[in-house]
Image (cartoon, rainbow over all chains, first blue to last red; front, top):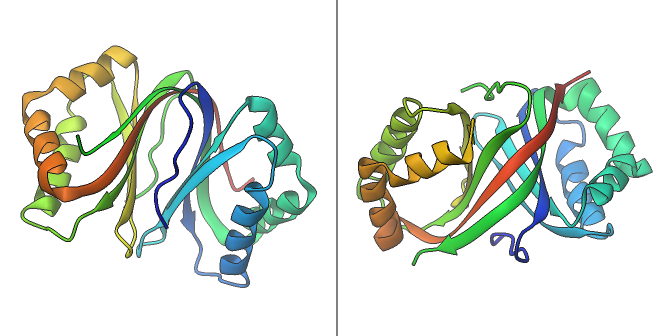
Length: 108
Length: 108
């Protein structure tokens, strides 16, 4: 997968850092489905996602507005995934909502 | 490594997404050294970093202020690493500076 290309700031980012449990139980299929579902939400601008061999993962999704982020959080299929994540897939996670103020790309 | 624990917002995040070249040439040692050096900078709050098997990496560092981010960017040893990164370690990178407005942790 290549890196997300986003429009000029300002826009919003959801920084989701997580440590997985050892439980699989459909996790991979759910993760793929959530990317597919998010990408069809209003205001979705892109996503970058990496999980390391040690179980630490970072997913950053980019959105046009905070209202778009709230709508994505409230999506009914996404809520089922959130419940499963809380119950069995994540040992620990942190979610940060941030306003991207400037951005640049390289190498230059 | 465990996830970064940060104070209550607001604070700032530098979201660094990258795709590596196939060139190693000291990359791992430099990456470790930059985390060590950043962690001694004024205003450093934490860092989360993951690189996947496919060469895609995400590093998010957290800072008390934008002035702290500018000072870290201007650090002389960090500038040498930036030059090497531009010249040989990164095929493509994106840097986004964002203000974290809210945050929460789980599972709940």
